[in-house]
Length: 282
Image 1: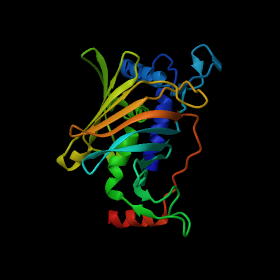
Image 2: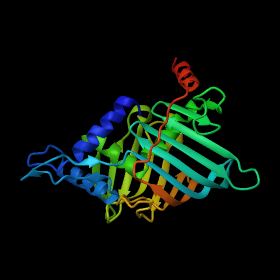
Image 3: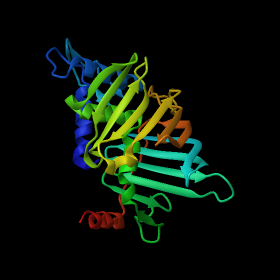
Image 4: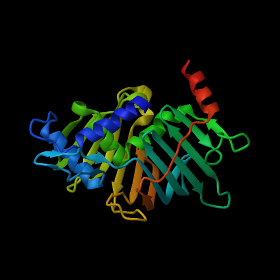
């Protein structure tokens, strides 16, 4: 998402997580469901400062996260065993996924996205200083990488809050379902998220509105939630992530550690990536 949209997400999330006084404009069912989902994940923190119905607003404490796991990813139509490391940021919207394939070759790939830029790195921070690795523009992968970020449970709740009245809540088969449109580079994609009885996001489906975006049709399942930070934070994270495209499993990761104490993570865009993006936009 671009910088303006990212700021809108942060503002919308903070507003929707406020302990509302009487007369709040949000639809009761929608605001209650989204607050319950944010609370279940541990995203929301509230203040006891104030009196009566007046309190400081609730805040969304998820800004940066980092996870480590192992499992399989699809490559060339085959499931490849890999070590998986993801650095996640929501202000700005960014994600760096580092994968080390198992076996003698130990092939390493680093895929990065920030707002409207996507690139591959030969090493973390490649392309930022002369002689330090290579940054290869990968603008064709921009939407796919952003979609991974915004379909994580925390991205789902942030984006649903930002969509405001466009977010719809329903009950299907006894489960609560949230549906909302994405915007920015992901405009034209609709997200449907299913919550379990504990208000945790267990399934996320994305549906593109046009054939041109067909590659963005995905289904991701999250399970085995727990607090996996080295220093416990009360933020619950999934222990398994299974992502499918067109019925094929493209990602199946068992999470070992998920750092939720807002680790220091930066995603600067190399100059050659900015140049390539500008040229691509012409």
